[in-house]
Length: 232
Image (cartoon, rainbow, N blue to C red; front, side, top):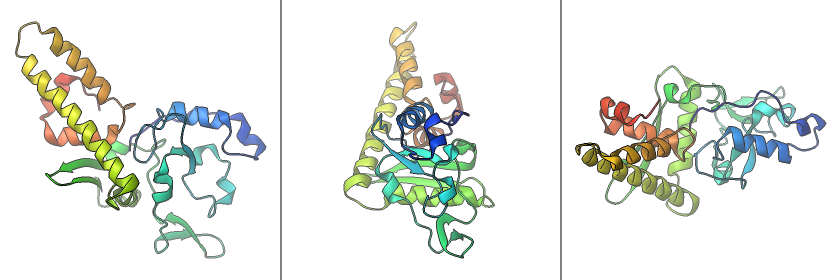
């Protein structure tokens, strides 16, 4: 998950309160979220579901609220229901949104409040999330949901997601390895080209940016990341 800037003006179609899925809504979400699922950061292009951050079943008043709409892939169906930890409505019914809230990538500094990293072994890939502070329930809830989305299951969507993340991370590591070798050569044009490529692969707009950047912070010395121009 990565922080984004949401366009401050609500798309015009939402004012009619007939659809939250209008083309102007979809176009603005696609632009604001870099054509990625807001949960897993997989590139989705124009093919995505318009997701309600706070479930519309528990918060019907937010059904057409611009700040409550997000682009999601099938992660939308894998969100936790928070039955035991849920906020409740005026009738005492669970809203399926956790007490303490969750991080909103359009409002919160995700990278400052959420540790994200990848662990590889010969047989598996583990995607990990943790609140950077123990007294931050919104970050803890977000970490719990993202852990479930990325790690609950060994088939289908979850397996494919982990494989995609592993392949992307491995490719970036290969590019960095080649760069570190090339930079030792005097006036290496290839080193300069690789540096620009790595910057693009790790930019906020790139797929899996939050996880990849968190992974690189754990794997490389800060001076290497600064040399590569990976900006946090």
